[in-house]
Image (cartoon, rainbow, N blue to C red):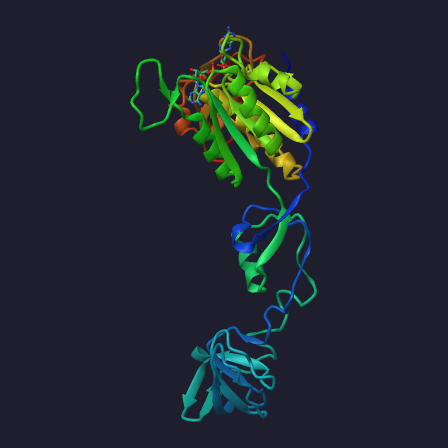
Length: 392
Ligand SMILES: Nc1nc2c(c(=O)[nH]1)N[C@H]1C(S)=C(S)[C@@H](COP(=O)(O)OP(=O)(O)OC[C@H]3O[C@@H](n4cnc5c(N)ncnc54)[C@H](O)[C@@H]3O)O[C@H]1N2
Ligand code: MOO
């Protein structure tokens, strides 16, 4: 059995960045990382733009101007202004070449075709220059930039419709067990509702990994081999739950062995999630998480998360961890280091009841996992504890 730190390091060392590219419509590229620098195809703004509703002026040394016309947003109208002339203008409208300042309308008195302004203006006042944000041909966004709603808006404002981004992994989730039935079916004796697959799917979606398929196998060796063979050869990442312990019907380990998946580790000294398996077959990473739902989700956040980040080429690859003040007393049984379901709030953390690896009831209201190291078997109210913040 290896330690948690050894297991994390093995995941970090064995998972390589995918470095594959794909082209996405900009609006569907949120959460992806740019595969290459993007050069701006246009100046932004593309023309001298008015920043205010008001009057565009050809400045002279007097506070009175002659009004000679109007330019609205969207107009392709280019009046020529002599010194001392003005046009009515609106926010976003193209400023005539011969106008060199805009006075906001609140500071203008209008008298038919004459206007007077309160004070002299500097050249360029309230005019957004051409290319103020980015110039045509300059780098708009650099390779490796993560696309956010703002960067998507920015790229669209430059007229860019598709972007080349790093491909995200293709992921298969596999559940195992004869006892599993779908919500909606009758709960006959001995059966339970299958929850791990969509719980993990939802965790993947919340991290913006969408290329995910779900596969279900019964506790049957041949069926397990057949399904695992197919998913291992067709995905970058395989996440199996259940069937990895030592029972007579736990076929996952044997099947992975038959498929010549290289075992990187099996069994980690931790609670929950002791029978965690991690292996590789060529470039595919394979995790077999324990079937117990809270153990499966904890292992997802602690280990699978690292693999996902590594595949995306991200260096800062663990979930954020802070020191928080415990508002609970906690006593640990046994010597395994433990991840504890908890609620973090403004520097304080409450360790919840129901820490058993089969229980989601308190995980359902958790937003953090408190780490209880091997050597520490209790926490008291007021102690500072290592707290992993979950992306929920
Ligand atoms: N003799 C031993 N028995 C067990 C050991 C051990 O060391 N020696 N370890 C225990 C620990 S710790 C864990 S964790 C479990 C892990 O077992 P498996 O990974 O083989 O998981 P299963 O037995 O298939 O399932 C465990 C539990 O979880 C439920 N389950 C499974 N899949 C789902 C799903 N998709 N949705 C909802 N619930 C699921 C399943 O019904 C079981 O109740 O082994 C211990 N045993
Ligand atoms: O390792 Mo298991 O997840 O403790 O129940």
